[in-house]
Structures are given as structure tokens and as C-alpha cells.
Image 1 (cartoon, one colour):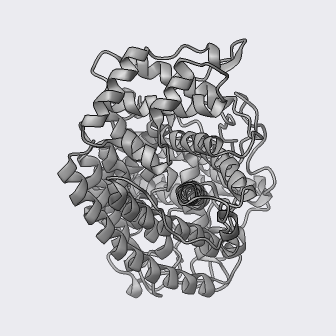
Image 2 (image 1 turned 180 degrees about the vertical axis):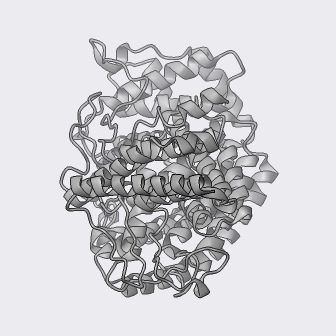
Length: 627
């Protein structure tokens, strides 16, 4: 017994010596004052710099320099955390208890280290783009004309699919005519026509080509990516040029190139504004059909511009106060009712997302007092509920009609996915409202409930797309990456703070649902890996904290706490709070009026999804090898 006590004392002394050494080496680190009765929230995610906005026009060369180079506080905190982690990883007790615990901690350490590195950004680059041959785009090989003619004839007698909807959405009235210009050129055709034709063929092949003919799809994709990578953003303002830019932006979103999508859409936006597409007086000289086309194209640029505010951390290019045309799409043809109902919902939803960024997430908003941010969030949450009700009605109308027509499952991505996006945005809003004083979690009840709803909606939606690999991948790009899936972050933090096993199961279901897409794109592979690693960390953390018996398991729980608090997932709990106010051995959180906890909390959430812009190839590799 005496020997055991001596060993414990020696271990304590060793730890104290390590802490003293770390403090000597890091004299400027902010240390929470132990005498306060408030909770200090420390996070390395304090920077409002979004990793998705740091790319340069350089083709193929990653950006240089650290994203934290201008923020010495973040650099110091990250350095201090890494020194603590070095000490943690050298302790033999972790390996002795459970190697999985050590691997989980190692993964957390690697995630922290990513925050000190520059994101991998390659400018407007596509994976299949080629060097432009002498003679330009006209020298690129096109898919066989007989295949194209056969498919175009077939779609006239078949149920409408994604290709048909694209023609409606982008006001392409005669796709066959454009194909003739490219395949049988009697005169030079524009780059815009080449882009429209190849993007159209890409989606046509995606739906209609039989198995074994993927080479045609590949050819169309090479052509469109090469053309988009070499597009002249200063080309004349014409309907065709705007259509080409918008289709390029649509495609870039599908293949998870959000920054490229934003660049192409911004070019289209500027063209629309220069031509006065957003002003009533410019429509006087045009007939009704052309006026409708101009309005359709403008509102598409508007939707993309607004919807990308949160993902890229950028204010909208288009100012609402400059617009005086009706907020509606005047589609013509058999699908006008369905497309009009859907786009009206999308239009309002995109505008709302932009206001969420402006009022809650932009640097100016985050600098406001916590009480003001929370009040803004409550007003936005109320409006979001109203949008949800309207969106549900429009969605049900569209789905009922589309099911009768037996449309392509690819259409479901754009019809059903908007519910997931809206609930994810609502989760972000509620994240700005602090939990009542004395709560076990800093997450308010409305936020965690919305996060659960969003996750269940996602599971239902992705479950219906299991038989179509492209539909599944495109859904992930549009609804989990383009609009960052905040519910995952919320669920994880709530689990860490409360050890909620039901939410842990839900988190693991989400992680499982997106596995298997590793080869679809770099973004899906990164998202799948990060979600797997984080859900494993959550499971091991709950296990460690729920079975804290003996010094070794207490060490494990403490090490997890150190990592997670530095990453912004877990607040540093006040150690002076009376044990009588603790519930289920979980620390009660007390708000510090001097610390803008909501600001740090929301910045951490947004920048957490910025990890998708980093190289995460080494994270979790040892886990997979062990399995």
C-alpha cells in the first residue's frame, strides 16, 4: 500500500514538473484564473479567417504561409496545446489502458496541427482539365454524334430528368441547335456554346447512357473542364455567355469546387448587373420571352451568390436595395408549375442564408455584444421556421407532381436536399443563442433539437439515393459541404459535454451514412474520414468518462479534456464550483460576461468545417491499419 502511494506521489510530482517546464517555455500563454467562478472558453478557432477564401489564381501551386501568421494569440495557444499533447503522448499509461485511446488522442493532435498549416488551395482548377491545344477548344474531341442524336431523340419521348430541368432552369430553349453549331460548324462558334453543349451532354450521358459507355461521359467532362479552366471572364455580355458561366458554376458545385463556382457565378452576376437584368427600366426594349429569360438568369446568379456566403465567409456581391424587378421565375412549358414552386423556395432560402451570414457570422456581426447576437438569432430563427413551413408545402407539391411523371432520381437531390440545408442553417442560428445559466451544456435546447432533426432528415434523404452513386455524391457536395453541416459539430460538442449516448448513436449513424464515397471526390473522402475520426473520438471519450476508475482512466479523461477544450469543443470548466451544483458528475457551465463565448463558439464551428480545405490524409491512418 505504501509503495502504491509513493508511486502516485512520484507520478504527480513528474506531472507538476512537466507543467512547470511548459509554463517556463511559454511565459505568455493565457492561463484561466482559478479563483473565478466563471467558465473560460479557450479555442484555437478564434480566427474569423475562412479557409475557403484564401486561394489564389495560381494553377496547381498551394498557397504559402500560415493562415494564422497574423494572429499571434492563436499561434501561441496552438503551440502551448501541442506542447501539452507531446507530454500526453509520451505517457506509457495511455498505451497500457487501451491503444484505441492513444490513437484517438493522436488523431486529435493531428487535427490541431492542421490549424497551423496553410489550406491546400489550387485556384480555378479541375481534375480533368487539359492544356488547351493549338487551335483552341475546336480541336478537342467530341463524343460521337450518333450517340448524341439518339439520346436527344429519346428524351423527347421519355419522362423528364435532370437534363430537362437544367434546360428549364437556365432558359436553354434549343439545345439541339447548339449541338449542330459545334458538330457541324459553318462558322466559328463561341466558347460559351462549347461549354453549354458539353455540360448539357455531361448531364445527359449521366442519366441516359447504358453501362459500358462511360468514355463518352469522360470525354464531355474533359471538354467542359478544359473550357471552364480557360474561360475569358471579360467576354461580352450576352445571354449565351451568362448561361455558360451559370452552368459552369452549377457543375463546379456538383464536383465540389465551391470557390470556382463562386468565381464563375460572380462573373455572371457582374454581366447581369452591367446589362441591367435587375432593373425594370431595362426590360422596356425587350419582348416578354426575352424579359423572362433575363429575369431567370439574374435570379439564378442571385441565388448562388447568396447561398455561398456562409460556406466561403464572404458578403454577397448583389445588394438587394438595387433590385426592383419582381422576385419570381416565369418558366414556360410542361414543368413550369413544379420549377416555379421550387425556385421560389430556393430564392427565399438563399436570400435568408445571406442575411444569416451578415447578421451572425461576418466579422462585423461577431464583434457585436453577445446579447445583441442572441437577439438577432432569435428573430432569424422565427423567420426560418416560417420559411420551413412554406418550403414544405412547395416541396410536397413538387414531389407529388414529379413522382407522377416518374422523373429521374437525380432530380431528388435538388428537391429533397433543401430541407437538410434549411435545418442545417437553422442549427447555425440557434448556435448563437447561449443556453440558460446553470445548464450542463452551452448548447441551447432548440439548437440540439434542430441538429437532431437535420441529421434524421439527412439520413432519410441519403437513404433514398443509395442506388445512384452520382446522386449520392452530388447530394453530399451540395447539402453537407456547400452549406457546412453544422448539426454534426453540434452533436459532437453536446456529446462531449453531456455524455449523451443516444446522440452518440445518431452521430455514428451520420458518419456511417457518408462512408463509401471516398473515391467520389477529394471533398467527400475528407468529410468521410473526419466524421469517422470524430465519431470514434466521441465514442472513446464517452467510454473513458463513463468508466473513470483508477488513475489511468482518469488520466485518459483528462487528456481528452485538454485536447477538446483547445479545439473549442469543450469549455474549460470552473474547478471552484461547488460539487453540490454538479449533475451526473458533469461540470455546470457559468457564463463569463467578460468573454464573448458565442463569438468564439460560432467561429470555432465555422472554421471546423474549413478542415475540408486541408490535407487530412494522415489522420486516422493508423486506426485503419489496425482494423
